[in-house]
Every structure is written in structure tokens, then in C-alpha cells.
Amino acid sequence: MSPTRRTVIGGAAGLAARLTLGAGPAAAAPDAAAPASEPDMFTYMIKTLGEPADASRVSAAEASRYADRVPPALTRFWIEHGRGAYLDGMYWICDPAPFDPLLEDIFNGDPEFNPAEMTVVAYTAFGSLRVWHRQRRKVNVDLLVNQVFNPPASSWHDSKTGQPYAEDFSVANHVAIVRTQYAADETAFLKAAIAAHGRLRRGEVYGFFPALQLGGRYRVEAVQRVKAVEHFVFLAQLSPFSLVGLTPPEPPAHPYGRTEVVRQIGPAQP
Image (cartoon, rainbow, N blue to C red; front, side):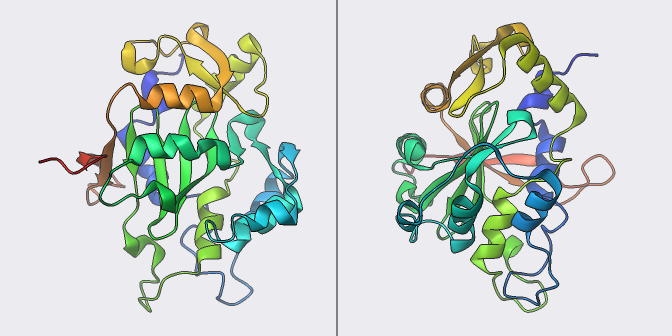
């Protein structure tokens, strides 16, 4: 059976699971300042997935320009391993600079999310962004449903001590991924898109035409390879963004809770 639109945009159950579980097995581990035996997700990713494909190494001078925008663990990764792709181009650790205007478009005037404090650190082949926020840490932006999710502060505080995890630990868990990050039907759709349209190059994504928000259909035939930044800016203009949250777990139907709209992103409504 072919994948559904719900798969690629992350229906409520799948989205809730991914948002709750984070990057993988180390997501709930103590922070990087804890004993050395605690796992580091960047190290785990390199060990299990290898070096990023189509990677562009970053000089120390260039990385230093982000010293006040992202934690040191990420800039070290850029210098040592580069910015590039994983899982056949499903996931890209990226240069943040081209995405700054996109964040401005989405969050301009919002009372809680200042785009000047946000940095796009990765994106997926179909339009999900991982963003680092200097105060709120992890932010996910889904451009196929125009939704924003920011886990509560409790998610990056140690429940035993009440102290925040180290930022290096948080950013590694936000950016690094594992082999099982995506469902089987998502990876199958990616393989079909590669077979039909070719493998993504750096700076490209697969876009749906017409866009799903405009009534487009989730079919490989509707996909085109396009420039990521330009396409994301286009998608961001189709409808306002909503901030979503997770309800308490409701097993067995919703073991991670359900996504619910909290408010609209943008200037405060009168």
C-alpha cells in the first residue's frame, strides 16, 4: 500500500511520538556535564551512521561567527565532520545563514519567539526544520502543516535535581539522529522520490506541486526537486503558523498525548 499524506506531514500520533522521544536513545540521558559514561548523540550518530554525505567542512573562523547563536558542541561537529546529509538525503545538517530570512518571515512580531534568537540547524527532504533557540532550546517547524512545536522547559531539566541539562547535550539530542528516525513508509516514499526524480543535492528538497496546503496530493508524481530556501519561503506564505503542544498521554490510543493548537504564531492578536 502506498504511503499517505499523513505519513509525510507527521500525523498527530507520529508527530507526538517524535516530538516526545527526541533524537533517539540518548534523548532522556543526563547532560553533557554528567559523568563521561553518559552517551553523546553526535558521537553515537557518527559511530552508527558514519560521516555526513555531501558534507561541507566549516572553518574555525566561520564557526566562530555562531559562537553566540548555537552551543559549542554543534560548531565542533561542523568543524570536525562538516554539514551534510544522512539517510539518503532525508535529513540535512545545514548552513543556518540562508534560513535567517525564513525565520524572520515566520516569527516576526511574535511575543515569545524572537527570530534573532533562533537558528536553523537542520531540515528534512520534505520540509521540517530543526531550530535552536537560545532561550527555549529546541524548536520544530513543520512547513507542510505550518505548525511550530517547542517542548516545555521541563524537557531539558533534570527531573531529579531540577537543574537544566547542559546546552551541548541539548543541541546534540536535537540535531543528531538515529537509523530508525523515520517510519518505513516515509523512507519508502523517499526511495520512490529518488528513483523518479534523482537524489537531492545540497540545498535541495522535494516539493509537492501543487503544495499540499493548496490541495496537492501526496504522490511521487507530484514531487519536484527544488531549492530548499526558496521553496520553504513559498510554503511559509501559504497560511499562518500555529504553535502546537502535547496533551497528557492517553494510552493506548495516544501514548504520547495528542497535538493541540495553542495559538497562532505572529504579533499578538487584539
